[in-house]
Image 1: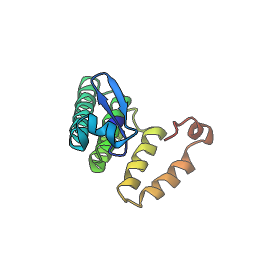
Image 2: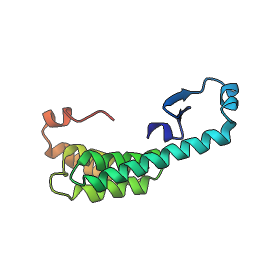
Image 3: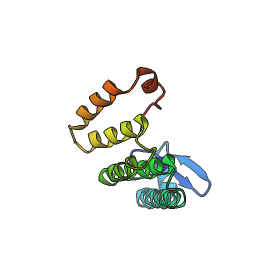
Image 4: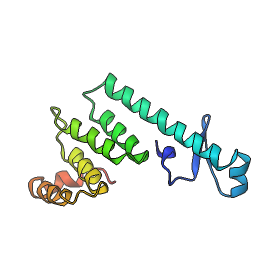
Amino acid sequence: QGLSNPQTQGMLDGDSVIIFESRAQLDAMGGLAEFERRRNRARDIGLEMARGWVRADPDAPTAHLALANGYYAAEMMDSALAVVERAIVRPGFDTPSMRVQRITFRLLSDDLGAFDEMRELLRTTPAAEMRRLPAF
């Protein structure tokens, strides 16, 4: 899904990753329009795979986070946030890690109320548990 992110200068070509270092290299691959077509295709494939994973294993928090991150890469922040909000109410999903993900998507959606949620999370979660969270 990272290669579907609009800020990347790389693309998936079959089973190879190509990182563009010059405009000539981009032109040789078919130009900007082809680059965008392939990037959009990678995004769509990544989202469909993540949706399938959620359908196949709805009790896997990682599947929901993969889908949310796919929407994030596609610049669909409202959809990313909706996935996390639906997931967090599932039994066992309301974890500090999932809450940080929700806070992140809320902030990226310009929801300043996320600051209050972060303060509450920091107030109620032991520091040792917060240190175990993955870096974003």
